[in-house]
Amino acid sequence: MKKSVKIVAIVIVCIITLYFSFIAYSAYTIKQNDAYKVAVLAIEKNMMIQSKTGGIIGYGTFPSGSISENEAVVLITVKGKNKDTKVVAMLTKLSDNQWRLYQMMNDLE
View 1 (cartoon, rainbow, N blue to C red):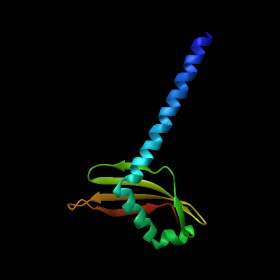
View 2 (cartoon, helix red, strand yellow):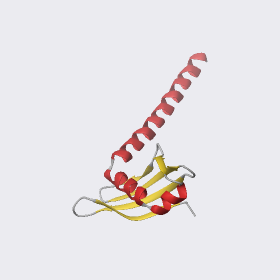
View 3 (cartoon, helix red, strand yellow):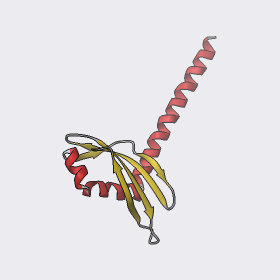
View 4 (cartoon, rainbow, N blue to C red):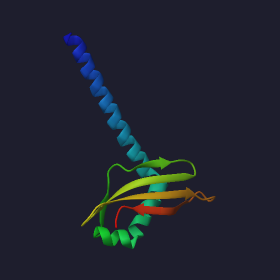
């Protein structure tokens, strides 16, 4: 009985480790993508986001979204001096392989 409990505990620890490894790898992959970088540049140039957050001091550790060959939707947490916000950036890849932001939404009023 004790041996089976030990095996179950080890399996659970392995599953949890794999889950968090996958999340960390996904976040790293998104942050390295040019679509994410274009979205961050657009966020930094957006005066409404700058004003409502009190100035951007950083970004969340774990962005999420979907990036395919020609389309991307990225959810980025923006850390502000006064207030944080979540931004959804939608991008498309042009014929010259450059990403272009075509829509950005945030949860600020």
